[in-house]
Structure formats: C-alpha cells, structure tokens
Length: 255
Ligand code: NAD
Image (cartoon, rainbow, N blue to C red; front, side):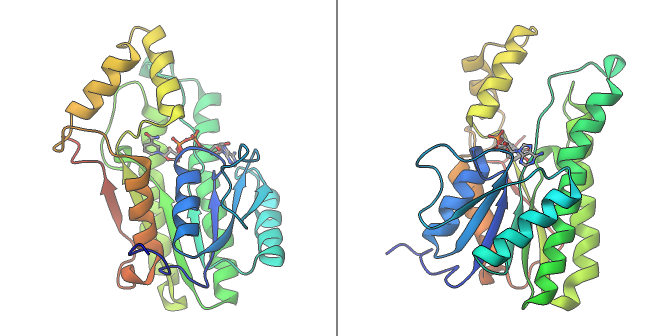
C-alpha cells in the first residue's frame, strides 16, 4: 500500500480539463488516493484514461451555464464535490507583441481566466453547502515569470494567481482553502505539439527544445506530470490543512 492510499478516502473530486494531459494524471492520482470523482472536459477521455468508477461530464468552462450544469450533474451522480481542480487551459501559438490578435487574447482569457473564475465560483457555492473543501487552480511558472511571444498566456496565468489570493481571503471562514500550482514545462503531448509548431515558426527542433527546457532547471530535467499531480494531491488533502492563498511551484527549480 502506498503512502498516498486513503489520503482522499471518502472525498469527491472534480477535475476540469481531466480528459488529457495533467488533468488526467491528477484524476488518476486522486483515485489512487481513494477519491471518487468526475472529470469535466469538452471531450470524453480516451478509452482507459478515466479512473475506474469516475464519471466523465461534458462542459465548456468558458460558459457559466455549462459549468453550473456540470457541477449539478457531478453532485447528483457522484456527490457534493469537496475537492475541485480548475485545470482546463489552453496555450496559444507564439505571437510577437506587435502582432497580438485581440480575438485570440480574448479566447485565452475566456478559458484560462474566466474559466477558472467560473469553476472557482461554482466550487465555492457547492462547498458552502457541504463541509468546505479544497480548490486547486492550475497556474504555471508563467504565473510569476514572463516568456517571449506568449503575452496572453503569461497574463492569464498571472491573473489566476490573483483569483486564488483574493478568493482564499473571501472563503477561508467557510473552511474552503484555495491554492495554485505552478508547473514548469511538462512533456505532455500538448507541450510536444506546441514545440513542433514553434519549430515550424523558427524555434528549435522538438528534441532540442525538450533538452533546453530540462537544462534550464536546478534539477537539470523537466518535471513529470506525476510530480505535478502529487503537489495537487498534497494541496487537496488534509496534509495541507494550514495552507491557503499560496502558489506552489513544481518546476524542478526553473532558473
Ligand atoms: P492538455 O491540452 O493536454 O489538456 C487540457 C485539457 O483541457 C484538454 O483535455 C482539453 O480538452 C481541456 N479543455 C480545453 N479547453 C476547455 C474548455 N473550454 N472547457 C473544458 N475543458 C477544456 O494540456 P496540459 O498540458 O495537460 O495543461 C493542463 C493545464 O496545465 C493548463 O491549464 C496549462 O496551462 C497548465 N500547464 C501545463 C504545462 C505543461 O507543460 N504541460 C505547464 C504549466 C501549466
């Protein structure tokens, strides 16, 4: 039996963007720790990705009614969520500042910032009906540091740290904790395909980009999705009962 089994026993978790990438690994990690739950995503997870006994609920985090319906469905089919991970996010293609497209800017903010706000708002509503809970928001190293050609993404990931710090102060009395995780680059399929399109725009080839990303950390490697999920598990669990309003970096010590 691993140290984490039972850590989330009896808990109900809801993970947005849980059909792929980091969200899918977070759901698997939560299930291994004893949580029941649901992934909420635009798409269903591919066969074999959804943890046994978990539900898959279709929703678009940009849309308030869709998010409300998803929470209602999870509450009636699985139970009142006491752990919510606002993970769904998108990364736009590289853009020079002089070429920023306002429509693309709005789309990045619609998913990464408005989507987090709508998810957190609904989480607070349901957790107030229960016994409180823990909300974890997926930020990024771009929640505190800039990167070239990614202004909208970096701004959206800074913005969610502001959401976390403010909401934590609003809802602490309701026994709701709110924290953010800031991963460095994680070699998910999404990151590899972004690196491939950047290579097509004059960036380094994918293997070089992966090597460079690993070399630019104290640990001389990228973090894994499992390491990010373990930090989310810690913040979601009672081990972090005294922690709220914080951004925890999981970045292998990005330089
Ligand atoms: P991913 O593309 O593999 O997964 C994102 C999931 O979110 C997908 O399943 C997608 O369908 C879903 N999604 C997108 N828009 C949605 C919407 N409007 N409504 C509901 N679901 C939606 O991405 P990932 O790499 O796993 O990233 C997950 C989160 O982690 C994002 O917020 C991302 O910004 C953040 N992050 C990723 C990395 C990385 O290197 N992979 C690093 C730091 C932060």
